[in-house]
Amino acid sequence: MEHLAPVAGERMLDCTLGYGGHSESLLERGVEVFGIDRDPAARALAAQRLERFGDALVLHDGTYAGVAEGLLERSEHFDGVLADLGVSSMQLDEPERGFSIRSDHDLDLRMGDGCKETALDLLDRLSENDLADLLWYYGEERRSRQVAPALKRAREDGMRTGREMAAVIRAAIGGSQRRHPALRSFQALRIAINDEVGQLERLLAAIPGLLRPGGRAVIITFHSLEDRLVKRAFKAHAHAGTLAQVSKKVVTATKSELAANRRSAPAKLRWAVAPHEATAPAEAQAEPDEGLGDG
Ligand SMILES: C[S@@+](CC[C@H](N)C(=O)[O-])C[C@H]1O[C@@H](n2cnc3c(N)ncnc32)[C@H](O)[C@@H]1O
Image (cartoon, rainbow, N blue to C red; front, side):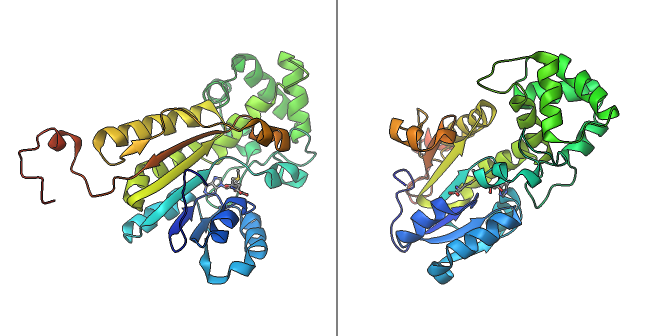
């Protein structure tokens, strides 16, 4: 909220509505919220929880990249854009959604709208080599060359559930008791199934065009791959003059937030502010004599 700095009467885009916690804080401050979630269950629950705000909450289905690009085409502008990436606790904690390493349901990992393949389809389609690359890049799994063949073999032997996949990975590479060794591979499959990198890249490209002058963007990521994308895109926009100010350091959870919510531990927040007035491209700004003064 500090970096979104909402003011009553403003209009903001919540790209990842989830349970509606962030949107609720904005609505309570008198902001009109456009809320997007690709998960129909999240939309339904948020709509019910936030019903008291009436028309101040406008819900969109689909993916945030698709919706953001549609809003850009229609020249819609916002005072704030927020994205709190990844899966929600709601998705993780529902075993039938197949997101958890303890799930006894088929490995699925689709968040909702816009996903075609399930995790089982993807495991079957990829070659051992391509699967190893995917686990390496999206999961930062250093032992991907051991995990991939173990998973391919286990699929041939009928592996179907999250719990079974977790056991196969532990048997293949061992690992600490504190953090389950299968979590990196689950993350990698989830990122691929939901095209999370492509979604984020498209949103980052759209952000300057979505913000009103002085508008604020806040993005919360949960792994280093996404954080790097945000950091680089904000820096490039600042260089081009399409964003005026960007966070130099990441903002992380405070001690008290960590104590109340352990899942906030890996969260990294970066913020940016749009120029207060329409600015010219960076190279033109370096030449103040070229008649840029009257916009
Ligand atoms: C971490 S949760 C957000 C929690 C939310 N900020 C709250 O206060 O409850 C992420 C949500 O974003 C949704 N989501 C993730 N990627 C998405 C995408 N590309 N397009 C739309 N929704 C997405 C997920 O379905 C999930 O409900």
